[in-house]
Length: 462
Ligand SMILES: Nc1nc2c(ncn2[C@@H]2O[C@H](COP(=O)(O)OP(=O)(O)O)[C@@H](O)[C@H]2O)c(=O)[nH]1
Ligand SMILES: [Mg+2]
Figure 1 (cartoon, rainbow, N blue to C red):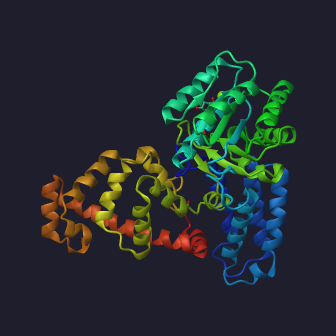
Figure 2 (figure 1 turned 180 degrees about the vertical axis):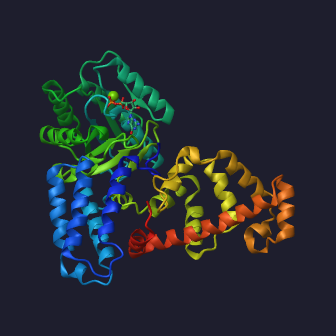
Figure 3 (figure 1 turned 90 degrees about the horizontal axis):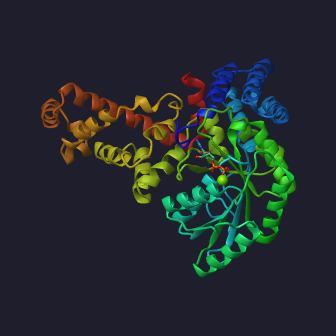
């Protein structure tokens, strides 16, 4: 239950219900309007159960039905696939626009590095503002920017301390002023410090309240007027469901927002907030928080997200995740190898070694189509990984480059060398073959959305 990059527990139930709904239409050579109505009803129920705003559900369903009942679907060769595609595309468009704008830094609209940019964090107490401020700072730092965290939550002394600790964890400076009472004044002093220290982005942590109230809004609007932020980001707790959407609406009306970040996506919530936000507030969901650690923040991609909700896996994110730990060049090669089916045991060995660098293997596996929700941290036997590494290390380079040359005598030599058994070596090779064929499928999926649909329609998973 950690990284959503690999994992999206909040949508597990929704995913299951929607894939169930596809049964009404998939695998049929012709479908009737009744089939579509049945599928759509089931999807409607699924969305409502996931706590999606009723108005949003209605709009979604109307749009989907209209398109699904069109000639194109009913007359197409595989109407089930067409239907799934419509649901996917509609879901994506309800989730938001595609991809971060070009020229943006990590999806944020910031000025060039020579001009000081300001990001204002807003939200209720406990929503995750302070944590998320640090997460954003870390992302910007990795991008080569020079961020400064500014402690403008003056309500609680502990808040400054919390930000200072986070800052030192990620090695980003924190501006704070003990005993200060006016956040606008702290901001003003922070600007001077920032200019002296060649900072390019200030991320301002502000004070939240348990509920929206007038003093908070008044404080925040003064700060907004003084700082003229490039980004005004509302941080809201996804677990609060519909109320996260209401809060976003109120903040937008009162302060004006440029985007929203939903936190606690790693928790077991129903996910309705993410689906309702764009339609109700018109504000893009920019990031989702997926854990308590500074690295647990992911840019929000509607397309990919829709794919995940529909249980289609997410090949792009998988490759990206790999890029973080391997390096760009290596990841590109890996992708090519997956496509050309020239992934070798040698590659596997280096993968196993880099898995150690990876936070959670589970999150990688969750991205593979068909694996979502089927692997838990406990299922991944760390000792087993170690054994695989030992067996692979006992092979010669030549063997790892071409596993087909590993006959019985080589097998027993490898078994002896690794202190395992011939059966275990054989099992590992079998596993490798399976992996290769899965990779081939995955790389095809990333190229061809049709293949995703047919897999979904025909595989009968779950
Ligand atoms: N599991 C999880 N916890 C989070 C996430 N974001 C924040 N938190 C936790 O939520 C609590 C409140 O966060 P904090 O940043 O102090 O909220 P603030 O009052 O808005 O500044 C802390 O315990 C954080 O560790 C998230 O994405 N996932
Ligand atoms: Mg805070």
